[in-house]
Image 1 (spheres, helix red, strand yellow):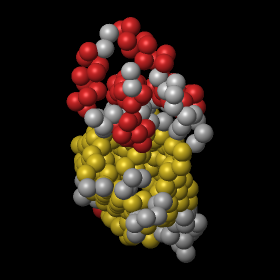
Image 2 (spheres, helix red, strand yellow):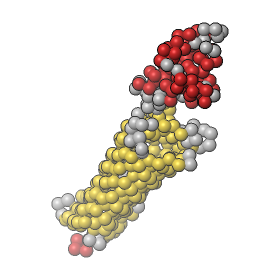
Image 3 (tube, rainbow, N blue to C red):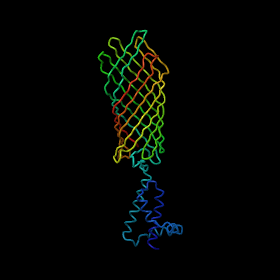
Image 4 (cartoon, rainbow, N blue to C red):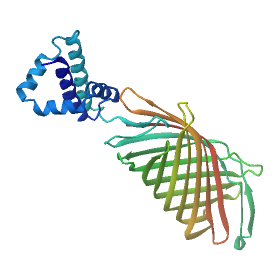
Length: 344
């Protein structure tokens, strides 16, 4: 039996094993394909060979070939390594798109992710004006508030096909210094988003779409020297939709991302001067617009998880309906955001 026949037959048998191993690397497959280039001869040889002949080939192959033992040992080592990777816990490797370096799903398995945002936002409440004729109260209040920390925490899960869910909680709480008239303004926000997400990849880009439910609670207060406080409270729930587009910045390790969100909520609003008067408006509407642009990068940890870091600038605009035509409330937030997360 000629050596070339036995060598190529073994290569063909190894190639059949590799074809069934999902984690086989392309370079090794190409090597074996090169050893088994004459498909017609190999197919005929395999079909004609008996089990005893195959066993004989396995036992006697490479006997007259220089470095035969070394070649066989190398082949066996590579096959053992591939078999171990196929059955090990890292068999599902992240689906990294080289042109974007966006790592999200695994091939054939889901991914879990969680993270924390350190948003440093400055409120712009503008001038709040209104009048309560029965009480002969009228005027406007303008306050200036400083940057303050606004934490945001999120977690979610994606299937291998990109469909998933996500939960996000956001909080902001700040009080201004007294104005020239001694008025202190307080602003407190809470939001909770529960969403279905869908990730799409096309033309070297990554697009994440989301839609779901948002609950929001807004409390804005004005401490008036000698007169007590004026409080505006609004809470309710409704629909929220959003999107995030990501693409790499040339040949660098950084990605550029642009995201936006719009929410329309049905709320109950209350305007109160504690101990004096309270006005309630049921089934009012609140509109919230959000936008963010930033850069991010991912780094693989020893455990196989991805550590994600991001720096962005975000802005939010909140618009609550007027209460019985007496007073309305609109304000905005803007500032930098630092994100740190884990994808696994």
